[in-house]
Length: 273
Image (cartoon, rainbow, N blue to C red):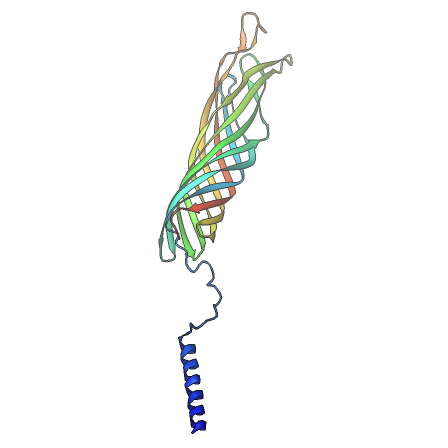
């Protein structure tokens, strides 16, 4: 009988221990976190900054009626630029459409060039020399974007309107072949062309945390042809009694400008991904 009682006590004790263990919470080992991001939504408004480098060319056509001179020369310019951009995207499955506008301050400068041309008038002949150098100080675009979004990576093409503002610094002289004398024909002055044209290019953009993206982009810009006038002054007065060999007048220069822009950008997407 004592043995039976002892066995029953042991069985009851073991049953109680098992029941308590069943009531305890079960600890499960945590698995590795899911890779970021599981998805990325490109829809919505974004804005950011950019910086890069540009290089271009201007083909200049000169017309100076007072000495019956026309001709063409060219200048190459290059320099850094940087500014801001903002836009809006709509994503449909893996396809994206959107628009973007940007404005950059630039320091694109051209080396000084010289346009030289022989001239003949009555009763003098000689050579005209016009020194000139251009700068592009502002550059902006309004563009559409069309791309393919592969999760956090976007590959896109882009195109639209482009504009730029700059200065063209000019000065000129005329040399009389008869006596070798030189006179000022164009006083040093700055022309202020506003250029308007089109742009096209493409780029790649990658998300690197919840609302930030970084991009690399190339744009070609055809900024059209701008025409600016300048004053030419009288030259060689009094060489012949009572005469001015070159009268006062005016001239024009037409500038056909193209540009290439390579830049990096950083954007913040305001709508959560």
